[in-house]
Amino acid sequence: MSRKQRHQRHKTRDSDCWSINFLKYVLHIFNIIFFMSGIIVAGVAVWTIFWRHKYISLLSTFSYAFGAYAFIVAGILAIAGGIWGCCGIWREQRAMILCYTFILLVTLCLEAAGGSIAYLYNTLLDDDLSFSLNETFLTSYAIDQGRTKAIDQMQQEYKCCGAVRFEDWKRSTWLSGAEDELIFPPEDRLVPDSCCISASYLCGLRDHPSNIYYTGCIYQMSEDLRHHLIILGTMAAGASMIPIFGMIISCCLYVKLYKFIG
Image (cartoon, rainbow, N blue to C red; front, side, top):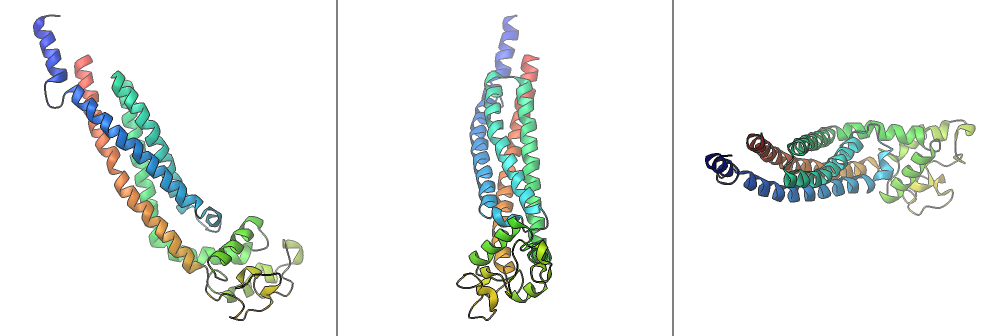
């Protein structure tokens, strides 16, 4: 290789403001941010699921859970992608950098999808809960063991009775169904014992306001879910900007390496 060719090669790599070494340094800094964002995104998504995991089974749609799980996958990809990207950048392997760019793209799509689902479900939340939660209460109580436990826990935690109002229990399968279909019989109860202000065996025989909660569970459930959806949507808006910047820099580095190495 002639002195002129060596000089051109050295200039192409190190001399201009978008040199290979400069892009590598920028991407290494970006990877630290990307890696940390993955930990935050996955952590927040796990928190939003497990904080109210026992109540997700009461929803008719899986939109909330799907959006949160999309963020968990995106967070894991960001963590793995940050490690993969550092290795590819350090070794200057174009195939690894190309794969890293693809990971950034998939992460962006997952975060955008999770954010879109959170926003759309937030607009439909009240209508969905007013139908689905009431239907679940009336048809699943004392029939589905998991949902029965979740309903009892919800009514005690939220200090509520019924999905919309306590009178809805009069139309429930639990009170009108055949005895052999039920996990436990009503035994002349008007509402479940978990509706009672001081829960005890057979306390649901009276539905007087001094004995049971009169507020429906839908109101507190809606407030809780909306709070979490806002967190997910805000996180999506911020986190989805990070992969875009990374894709631009990684593509520039890939092109530089292609021109330099051939």
